[in-house]
Length: 521
Image (cartoon, rainbow, N blue to C red; front, side, top):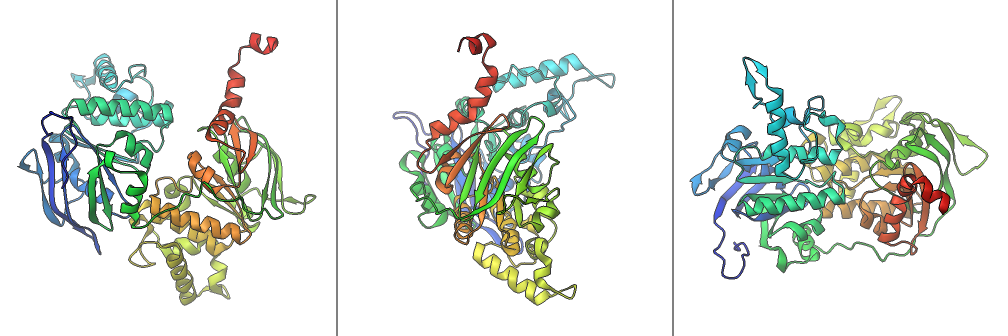
């Protein structure tokens, strides 16, 4: 086990948490013989593919899951929390990827829920807001009014409120699970500054993320899990992103930034003058067979809303769709009509919008095309099992069987099940909304391979992503949305990250321009 890097001449940082032989078995082992050490005042990045055991190990440390094997010690004393509350009493906190805030309560009430200052059975509002303001100031959010309902804050600020709540009382160890998934670059920079302050106070941090560029900025050491086993722990300064990926996946993964443009076929779908309020304003574009078109833009720029209008999930104010025949409008006013027209949608939120979580892989994968595995109105079980088995092998879905409920799968494998549904449907047009969010580098490569196969088969794909590097590596054209408008479309070879960002801000900058400036321009 490597030691944590320290400045020359400085005393080694003390070990805060130690695990020996940690294992967890459900139907099959998900962790086996994991040894690790975590030092006070360091950031340990925990990484690996989806299903590698990261969440299970973190939940064991946080008291949410009990290990089957192994022992933990905290500051040299035996540590075996029976619940999250037990762990928090000892200063071990975890901020989950899914927020647990109560949207109807204020920031202050969320922060101090369970610790509300009272007198004679009544909540002391002034004391509550003052205490909340002090806590928010600790992580640099002193400008937020603690009396605001938490639902009025952006998702990024809600994430910071969640972190602030975890720091109430003594915090010795903080586990952050994908903390930047919903944050803007400015909010990420702010979070990293707070992490440096926590390190200076001696707080140990376990940082879970699939964003390898972040790990290089924030981590002291990187611990890699693969298939439930500890592969390596090394100082971050000694590693490149390619080194980390190789440890995670066991092979080299090519990003595809230098790929050639795919050859575009005939138009598969024409979107004309699509409008919904101020969210989507008069957007027109063409999707061609055999190509992937990306949609870039800031959060709230209208990308997701445009995909939902095309899919018929939201009611449009105006606009229409056409197929390869420009004079013939497609009648798509609901998802059912969209599917019948050969349009599929991989939703941004797979858990609430894309999957039937308690149901099996088999049920979820064939849901959009039951007719293909039925005869005379009766489901043909053997045909269905054969079809889903082939899809599971093709997409490399890690599961015990096709009967395993999808809520037992990792996020990346859940996303593959969503892809399996549309591969089974064999739709001509596929809309992809953040298709690799929360997905590890290995699963991402598998999804990219399917996108390549679909394009090669003549499908038309429209992909929304907040990751510009992903769009630049996978797409043949990139359209940029800004304030509800499609402001520019770049061909492969025309774009740079700077140009994409400038276009994304362009409509907002024009709206903020003073009237006197506009008149003099």
